[in-house]
Every structure is written in C-alpha cells, then in structure tokens.
Image 1 (tube, rainbow, N blue to C red):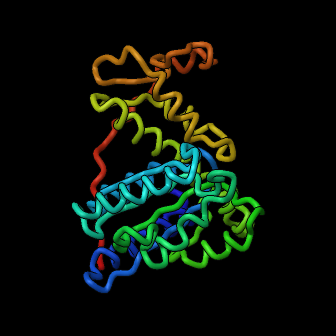
Image 2: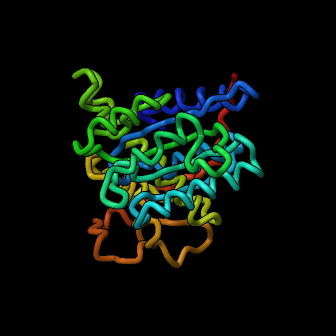
Length: 272
C-alpha cells in the first residue's frame, strides 16, 4: 500500500492477527471491521491476510443471503472448518451493513462474537479472526449497530475519501499522489495475478491506471481493464491489448511506449 495512512491501518491489523496466532489457549475472538468505498480492495485485503498468516478461510456476502437459515448454515460451515483448522481461521463477512431477512445483519453476529454460541443445541464456535467489511453504515437499528461495533477489536475507515477528510491540508496533495502510485502498483499486481505469463507492462497502460481519479473507485476500473486484456504475446502487455479499442483515446505519440518490468515482491516479515 502506498498511502501512508492506509499502510499504517493494515500494519495494525497485521500486528493483531500475529498476536492472535501466538496467544495459544488464551485466545479471544479477534474482530475487525473495515468501512471503505466500493472497489477499494477489501476482498483483496482479506485474501492477502489469509495468505500472509496461513489461515484457513471462509467467506460470505450478506447480500447473497435470502433468509435467516442461511446465516445458520454459514455458522455451521465455520464450525466444520474449525474442526480442521482450530482457531486458525479467517471468517470474512462482506457487506455487513446490508439487511438480512428485513433487518440489519449485525444482530446475527452478537452472540457468536461474544460467546461463540449461535445455536443452543450445537457446540459453540471457537475463537477465530473475524473480518467484517462494508460501505457506509445505515442509521436503522442504531443501538444494534453500536452493540456490534462495541465488540470490535479494530474498527477502521479505509476509504480514500475518509482518509482525505481526516488529513491535514499539508497531507492532502501528497495523499492524492500516493493514491495514484498505489493504483499503478495495484494494476501491476492484478496483471500478474490474472496473466501470470506477463513480464513486461508498457508505460501507457500504467499511466492509464495512474490517471484514474482516486475518488472514482479506481480498483474496479483497473480490474475491468485487466479482464479485457487479450492477445498477449511474448510476455508483454500494453493498452493495445485492451478488448475494446474505443476506450483508449490514445495519441499517436504514445505508440512507442517505454517498457517497465514487473518484479516479484518479497513477502513482508512479521514480528510478534
């Protein structure tokens, strides 16, 4: 992450997960809530944490649940995963601010977070890492939301606008520059993920990522562009490989693009 404030938040989350992993029998559930703009990379962060800390993983999207029985099925799945992984499990709940069977979803997680109990006739859930993500919270059932948030170990806002609003005037221009650099970095990582054989990315494509407005949910646009890439040859990709040529609007002077190599990133080290 290139934006300093976002990097600091992720480092705090990582330290807490590392402490959880090393707590042994003294573990308590670690609950993290992240509010961020749509397309800000919340799902990518969840998978990165899973990989970095070698955690088993289970995921649900509240918007895909039609009635309350689905949340019980989800808790059953968590319990099944814990038989295999013990507490080394990351439970990722997306769109936590959405409604479930006509009411806010927060209430369904109060008891599992507090005691692990979700059904009196079933064994309780073991302490694990809970990651709740969503966009802005609604005003309905505010007391239930306050009760839910009181159970969070970490509750952060990671959206670009939230970071910008809380920054000093001196930081705001730098934050935009860092955010644009982050967009280039994100685009390069996504290209490597979607197209593993690519070794070279031309400057015109990286500039395309950089020039997106940080307030416009650029991660979604970048992902959309990368899924459009086709006819990739000789491990090299440029704007010419975009599926829809009408979106390019490139000047002829950009045809001779400077090339940039993608380098493998070293894994981050963690200390307890």
